[in-house]
Image 1: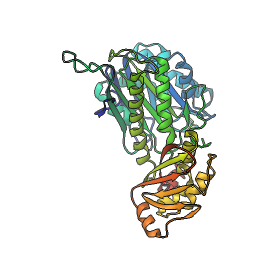
Image 2: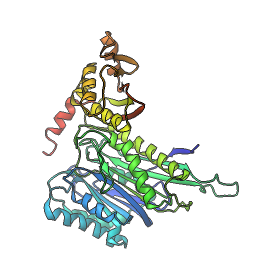
Image 3: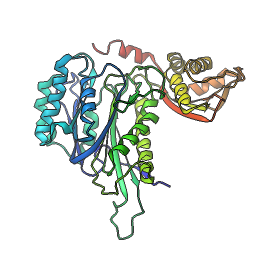
Length: 428
């Protein structure tokens, strides 16, 4: 049995990583808006990116750079997405990365870049370049929290987490306390424009949700020694089961990405695909990402409820994911949740149009433990009991399709009037 535990910290929890975040003057609010992550040695690196056909320059730059699977630093700004900003936007992304590389003494190709915020406005690149020396000088193990704050946009709280997992043979009594253990740390952001469908470059996210197109950003670090194919595979699978199974508003961002850097400083035996150690690493990464994904939903714009959609009895895993994401993304389901209206017909309808195999005569729906649909019709006449379940801050919904043995879980929130009011004037 794999031994894994959550530990204090975030992006700097693994050995060899430092970070920092500060105010560069990008945001009118005066809050932190520029972050830097750094490993003191070159890392094996991988990333998954938005499958939106409209992509920010940072997504395009990173996709090209990570073909070689190497990186040592990530520079991130918030308050400006630097998307749909023409050739100047691409030049600014390259400038951000290039100036960061110069200050840290790295190859420019080993610096990744990310942006998040309003689309269509040029970056205040001079402010960013002016802030880089101070940002780099302040890199520290304690700087992980500041870095997590620096990538926030509409988030209310910084989101970070870390895990420690035992791999390989158990350490001997004479061995050091760190032998046989690796750490993974991460930070993320995103409260609106959240409906990620990310994939490895050149791959497709088809089958991991509905056809709809966050900005969500996640940066992860690990001191594990892991082969590039294994790192890419673990990242892809962990993301498909976590971040790609959340939705706030059904809108996919142009900037979504998850990057992971592995510097090997734990000095473990190299992790490769198909081994026990690989499965332990993949499981730990999935647990870490799931905790962060749930944080995002609980902190979503205007959210008053955290909702878990559990699908069972599907004909395939793909079908299960499609139904879960379809129900989670339904505007009518989400508004009913906000109003506390036990309108389970909307849930059934969302399952029916998901594209999965659905038989309404076999499908069952539960709100909490309360059965509301069975045999093609209503199974519960006590609407007050159902309403009491929907009045809670955490609402579990189960859809049993009754046509197979596969399942999946999606996570969402209600759609409130606060969300509508906020996003009606987000830019202004």
